[in-house]
Image 1 (cartoon, rainbow, N blue to C red):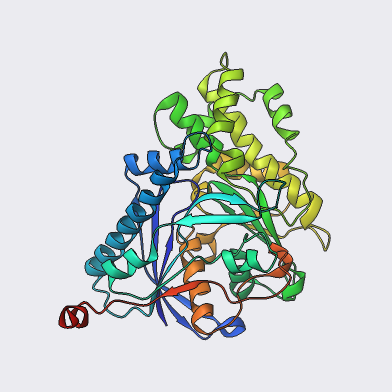
Image 2: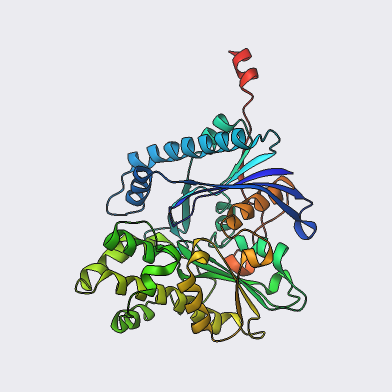
Length: 386
């Protein structure tokens, strides 16, 4: 199967496109990444998404429009990607969509639910390809949290007979997949550990009017604000029992702005330093408490935008206290492409009518086939019918 995986994550830095050649499915899966590209997100589109994620600012008409606007952006990006790289053979585009809101647990007012937008019909129209989308919803229908989904792919591609491995993806949110040596599918643990780059990026925008901390240089130059770190450590999500998932609704702009107001006397470098410590602490804390029951981790393999932050990687090893911190590149893979590749693999499972959720990670009652399929559009046939 030739598939294009699309990923636009909670960090809102851009759209990842991964063109993959995938053989087999489930345990026989073999993946070759042919071409990868990241398309930077326009600043006005990012503002619209952040506004839509704000429960105090978003309106239904804005989200309705944004669903189609993102569909156009995704579809045009796929069309340009295919043209640039001479891609003509595509079995499906596998789109995660843009998460606007995620309610993993029911409350008195709300049922458990999730919303990813980026209209697949528009992507199909503009790209001329079949589209697989809405991967999270069937898992939630089966009683799961709809997240995390990537651990299923981690199990297929990274399990090892002799090494205890943890796959850590640091996007806007951090999530881990725990693969003990020789593990079976039902033994895999996976969950969101807390913020990844999200709070760091918000601080960089607030204090320095730039999108991220390149290589961790700003954080490295700051001093740790101990009272702030101690406050953050007490956030209830940090020690919450897995399975668990979170997002911008918990650690987004509103949360960050409140910190910036209450710690307004602190300088930007120190805030970035402390928030970087918090990301490292959340990951190490969750690994120590929930992920090392079968032995100490041998390899912590980091991917996502956070893998490029050397200060964060150093803090991860410091808080973890043992093992080796590697990037995807150390294993011959691509850190930035990992999640786009993962959704291509999930789409491949859909096309083979095979389940692709991991019950131990999401809490679902049943293994289910994920994704909705939007057929490709044959424009020549459409014109003839008209």
